Structure formats: structure tokens, C-alpha cells
Image (spheres, chains in turn cyan, red):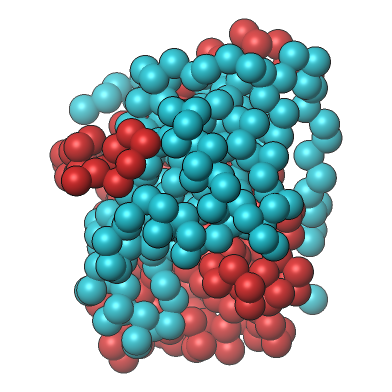
Length: 192
Length: 192
């Protein structure tokens, strides 16, 4: 068991305050050992009934990235083609299992695997942040064309993409535009 | 701008390795300032198009918690009624906006607000972890009855619940049962 000192000496809030979505990247590859640390953080994430629906595909080969992008960021999705400037892309695929997702969804209504993708992906993002890497969540891409390009098997869906790289020289974090506390949360009742 | 020293001196991985879902809690209230730090972490989370769909309701009043639980954890949802042993519950409600979610979903197919709930909730979880608090994600509850109890306005849905508290005395973290790297991720192609 980790000592309480080890557990509590690493507050998360400084990382969260420092994190920004990065859309301008340095022309510098990302070391695979750093990407692997981020993958580890994501792999250890919790999920509904420990169903572990997420599967990560890391694209850092420039030719694969280009070919992937020509499919995934085509047509109405051209708006996010800037993503290809990132030295690495992560495709967050999901393989929803039967109990937690089909059966559960039938009764309860929530596709938990999408929550799980958010949790696992954000573990990746925060670990990347803590190592000086920038990331940006991308939802605006053709899931169908991405899946076809990667030859995902039936039942596996390309859900989200993360762009990853060192921030461009001269990039500085802007302000975090967020709801204030009063709009975001309330105690023991829906706010009036 | 934070110096790179500040940014990179707080690795996330130790927290992620130490995190477990906690289902046995000490009979000890959680300080509101700690809950507020967790709320801050969640509030600052990224979201699709910065649409910020999440709204957090913190229930730490024992009478409210009991009344909420009698609705939310009734019928087929009795299996998660143990959640009421936690001194605090967080209801993660979502208010999906039009551009990022209705319009986006129509074309792209992904209800991004569920990914965003996962991201924001996990910020809460990791901040809680870093302050010695235990949490457990709960998806198995009646969203309809929870929403009715809290009088959520139309268009706002109770998406997930977090149980929060100090782990019970004698509670020790078990092993993290997770896919190995080979099953979880691959480089530049779907694994064979």
C-alpha cells in the first residue's frame, strides 16, 4: 500500500490549472516512452463494471497519419484537418461490452462506454500535461471513415481522437474560459 | 504563465496508480473545502467546443441524501443502494447544448456531452484522490427519478453519480485488474 505521504503529495489541481487545449505544435517528434506513460495512465482508468471498453491506437508514423487524416478529416470534417500538424494522433476506439453497455443501456439509458472513453482519455491528457506535452480532444472527424481506414472489427467504433505534441515555440496558454462556481454547481438541490 | 518546473513537478501517474474505487466509507463527514477543491478541478475540465454541459449537485445533507437515495436507488437499482453509506454524493447532471451536441450528433453521431461528463467527473475523482478521499463512479441508478427528485429543468439529465468519502478504517486497495498493454493499445494500426 502506498503511504499517505506519497498519495497526497501530488495535488492534481496545478496540472488542471495549467492544462490548455493545444492546437499549434512544435516540429518535433514525441518520444515513444512518453506516449507509453500516457497510455499507461489511460489503461489504468476506471470503467463501468470494469468493462474496459477503450482501445487506443497511437499514430506517430507520418505516412500513416497523413493517409488516416485524408479519410478522417475529409468533407464536412475538413475543419479539424489542422490536427495533422500534431506529431502524434491517438484514436480512442471503443468496444462496448454486453453487460455494462447493451443490457445496461436498455434499462438505464446511458451508453456508459462514452463516459469511460472520457475518463480514459483524460488520464492520457493529464499525464501528457505533466510531462510538458500538449493535447487537444477532437470529436469532429468521420468515425466511419476512420474505422474503415484502421480496419476496426465489427462492434469497435472510433469514438474520439487526441492530437498530441510539444506546444509550438511562442505558444502561451490563454485564459481558461469557464462557468463560475455559481453556475456550475450547487449544494443539496438544483440551483434556482 | 506557470514555469515549466511547476508544471512538470506533479506527475499524475502516482495518483492514478493509487486510485481505486472505494465502496466502504468511514463514518466521517467530508470537509466542504475539500469538496470545493474537487468541484474546481471538475469545473476547469475541457469539453467539446467548450460547451461545458456538466452541472454538479453535491449532496452532503444526510436527510436529502436519504430521500434522494430512496428514489434513485429503488427497484432494479437497489443493487447500488450501498452508495448511501458514502457521506457525500455528487450528481453529475448534463445540459447538452445545441451546436456541440444536437447538431454535432446529427452529423457525427457521438453524444459528446457523455464524454465531457467522463472528463469532468474524473477531474473530480483525481483531485479527491490527491486529498485522501475515496470515490466510486455510479451509473446504475434511476436517472428519471433522480431528475424528478432534484426538479431538474427540461433538457437537463442526471447522467452519473459519484460516491465520495474517506475510505473505511482497514480498507486497503486491492490490485488493479486491467488489460495488459498488448490488448489495450497498438502503434499505427489496429492490432492483429
